[in-house]
Length: 171
Image (cartoon, rainbow, N blue to C red):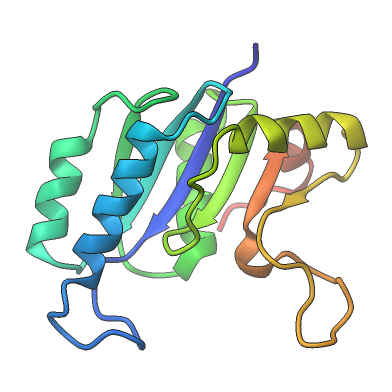
């Protein structure tokens, strides 16, 4: 079976919708960890959290503690990077580090949560049924507010190393 990974772009600092020192980042990280350790994805995958530096001490401490720990479907890997380039820079950072280690890739924002059993396996099944040419299985809103279905919001979705190798350019 081909191994997969689940890349999560993470930021523990202030967000537009949460006031400074609200603890939102830590609550979010705890829920991400809960789903990583409790929800069966029905496919082997590692969870790779790319932390954009500059967040809270509490989150940095927890990220250090969970790095290398076992998850329900694999293990947790925490990467630290400069807080620059938003999500796509984080996705690229993980891809360049682990390009040769995984076949399936799910890219995800930290506030889009997968807490449904079989979610990863279902994405892989959809990918395999559709075919492997120019395939991206979007997991978060395609098109919005009456606009055509032109893109997957936040680049959130699953694809394979074969697809990524055809389009990857260094960031």
